[in-house]
Length: 458
Ligand code: GDP
Image (cartoon, protein in one colour):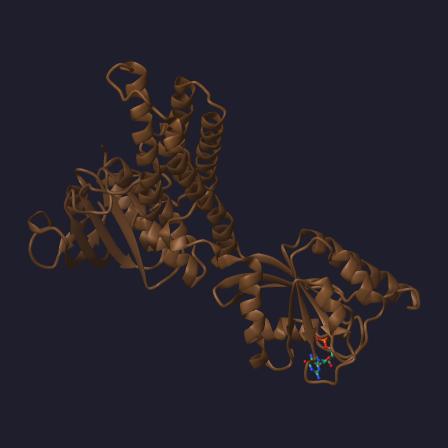
């Protein structure tokens, strides 16, 4: 394979930049652009670094470090040279150009990781996890992505496919050599194992949604009538003062959005305009107010979680009942705010309307502990063990879904007494999808699609 080069660090000003070169002549390319202060590049041992000067054909460009890795003990499995120079955009691009002039070709998106895959350094799902590690915004998602990088999903898929393969082989043997097989070949004896594989796949499919929540966060609307304490809650959660807090009803008219980490979950919070009757308001104010309320109702449609805030110190009013009506069918946590004030709110009624109810004093952050655990419980994030492998993207999800429905057909087929060859074909199609999922058997087009999501230099 030819030798490729790219800038591995972001195209921005920083302390250092790294230009990565991989391929058979990587060390030769490095020799042409890098001169160590002592010794020769060609004499360097694998996994060693040396300080020196970087040149192009015209002049010295910079000074920096060169690190050498020899095949197969490198990220790509090929010879790799990494030159680190000062982190200016111009200087970095000149070092890259020098490497290209010295015989390397500019790498495409994800090409280093693609080579790692082709050289057997990573499985496809491990390669895909690299992009997840880069995109992790929370400790929990990073931990899961690292487990995936260690091969968690690959192992889980292998575990399922090896059971299905075993059954498929037995069926094929019986079809081909019925005389030599056991007389009483009972397909029902496979039911338990197939049902078990199906459950494992169903859990993996569930992990896709949990992973998406961990990665992208949960679109969360904070709703409630004016003065319930929505902005105070938002500010406490975001530890900022982005929402204007006043005791004048209707202060928050536009939607304010911010991401916060609650425990290990990212909530994409929006504090919406308070819901209230606009009929009595002066006309222009009313129009603006109505836009805000309509925005809130639209947002309520889109949101995946609503924190419905009720004021503990006021009895339920018309707006509260309207809100309760609008929240029907949504994932909602009923937040009783102002727990420090005397109770005038009908808590018993609210408990009948919402599955999760939690009391807080929005002014006091210390009272938020139960809210955090109720959020985790309501979103059911603990239902799957993500560190045992999870479905991280649409490609993987589709393969797992096809395999799962093939297993469902196989199980139904056994129960309905279908012919053995039909069962064999169905199980083979489940296997095919699982092999595509793990990357054991996957087309060039799929591989190209996977690496298109990567950045150049990775
Ligand atoms: P919003 O209209 O729902 O956004 O309500 P705000 O967050 O602007 O709060 C309305 C008023 O209630 C403000 O004066 C807040 O200081 C007050 N408030 C908010 N939370 C609490 C609380 O937990 N206890 C008490 N006593 N007052 C609160």
